[in-house]
Length: 321
Image (cartoon, rainbow, N blue to C red; front, side):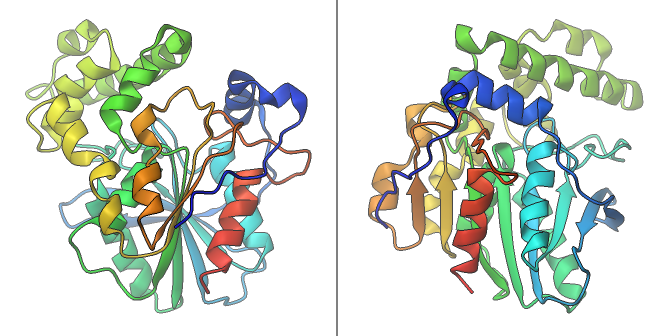
């Protein structure tokens, strides 16, 4: 598919990548009714919590599954904003809280990671069992976008109900993205991620002292050391390098089974050059790549109540019906 440059021009103040990133992630307020929470049991004995937003709640037959980013949840402003625009346009929306990302720690030592596509598959199976939704789309943000693209490009049979997906600010080359986040300009962001993850790992060490110690967690001084210590080995990878290689969506984009849009800003400081798969998109019948000049990381601010990436996700997904 042709690469789309996009016509997104934000208010002047938000042309700064850091301003748009920080404002959208922390200061934006999104009015949305309190969702209905549903807990589903996974095949390995763990659980995930789903947050449902129905709009007018009439049977629409159309559902969007939302996937959050690293250290996120279904309650983040970017998830709420996307839920709002879809419910306003007649869709039901369900936000997936990854393992350990709702208010309660999950049961197992493992949690979630950028390649945890099997969890998406289990959630989809549950959604199909409701027998209400002949049309299901998926939208993923950041880490959730990588997870989504991997799921849609893997060697697995996809249910016919899935019509396509949208990934926003997708770090589809995990090693490259880590290198970008580790740059000095991103020190505050990387440190915030590190502290958040260490807090979760300290609780996990308390619950699973035979598998992880407080001392090991405290010694971690970077996101890569956390991935070496926990993320990789807890989820079946040899080490961080093995995890980045096998979990990166970049290796699955040539085999997508449904139409997809990746929307990533050129000034996103969390993404490396390989996170913009121009050549793959140019030679793919299913991958649409849009790279606006501005937008930071999930920060496509507009003067309207809905952000640019929300309008584009709705537009793209409704074009598939």
